[in-house]
Image 1 (spheres, rainbow, N blue to C red):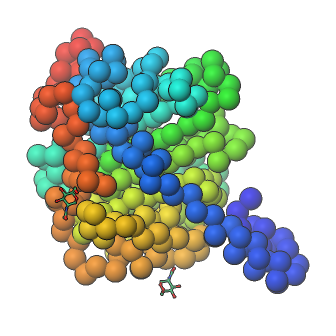
Image 2 (image 1 turned 120 degrees about the horizontal axis):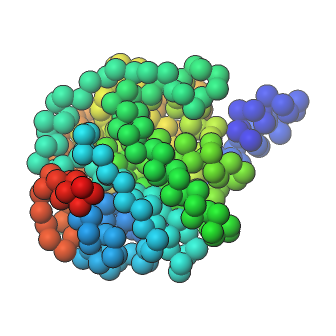
Length: 311
Ligand SMILES: *[C@@H]1O[C@H](CO)[C@@H](O)[C@H](O)[C@H]1NC(C)=O
Ligand SMILES: *[C@@H]1O[C@H](CO)[C@@H](O)[C@H](O)[C@H]1NC(C)=O
């Protein structure tokens, strides 16, 4: 139950305050979980063949081994994600690749702000970014089918969804979709950690997400990383999810809660005047996300490879 709803149901103001206070005091972020998510996100930048065997270099070595892998790619829009099962953690992992490092500035410049109605929201009030939504839609059925089949085999399994950059936007949309279709009972079975994630929806979307994934979503940002600040809030887009901000590489983090019916918290990365960082986008918690593979090939060639692998 969302704190807002429990609030409107409660007659006693003190109780209402306590409920709100209690809910907002939940600290979900754990740095060790963040490292787990980070290396799974980094693995999404590795090659198709290596990932299928969970032999992708540093990203795979630093993570619990995944088996029963499903690799989903759609070269049309450069979308790539994988689903795997970690026996050690009895956990299903879903991770998405971000934008090709070399194309990042180009991508940032050309990112438009077209919105469309959010089809998952029955109230029909919220909107999502059209480009991110389409990118997710290209691979959504394969991703959800893979999760469904793993969940049928491993009934107690929890779920971790993660991604860096564009991959973070896809991870958020996937988490909402899977919450709707598969993990319908308990949102706390889902852990959603994103790194350098762009804005995905509007103000109504932010409130809706807050209700769908109350305790489970951490949005990690780094210094002046430009990507969490696009598309601009000027166009009505707004983040949700508690922001975990690392002001510099080796600094400890600051946690900024985001509430329903509130604008983005200004105490984390929004406290900086300029957000032009590309280097701070490519490295999180001291880990260069696109450099954890067996071979550091430009991501573009890897997508090409995945394509020919499918053919
Ligand atoms: C952060 O720490 C690492 C490892 O100790 C070091 O190599 C790096 O230079 C540090 N970065 C900064 C910005 O101080
Ligand atoms: C931001 O920080 C100030 C000072 O610590 C605090 O009073 C305020 O409540 C914070 N704002 C939010 C939205 O958390």
